[in-house]
Image (cartoon, rainbow, N blue to C red; front, side):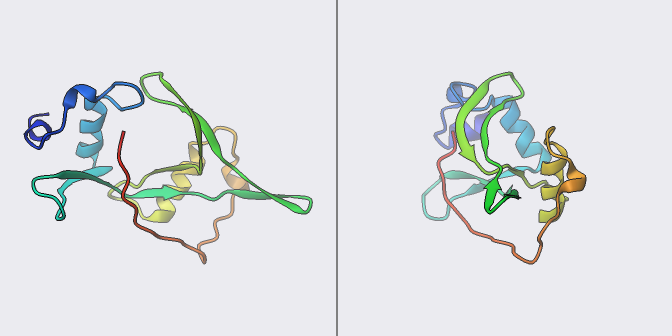
Length: 134
């Protein structure tokens, strides 16, 4: 927490509302799921860098194509986040490639039979985005 505070980050906000507790953030950094880096565009500003893998899971329903959307989830501490409306995804771990992370996403979905999922690795999208972290 000292390094965060030295860079003007209020650590008392961790664990409030939808923000993860400081201990979970520290675990995320230690595991390599995210990194803290200096923002080259701002003086003494720390930024959290995360490689996120999202899946566009679809199935045919007659003439329609349906996509799986995560509408809510439960955090490790029991809090529920609702109104997410996003693609299923995860943070890529340091030892994983994109396909490993995608397979892990599917394996962790209780209602999806991973034997029924076929990965289309020919169409891979990649982009970079800056976003405020809560």
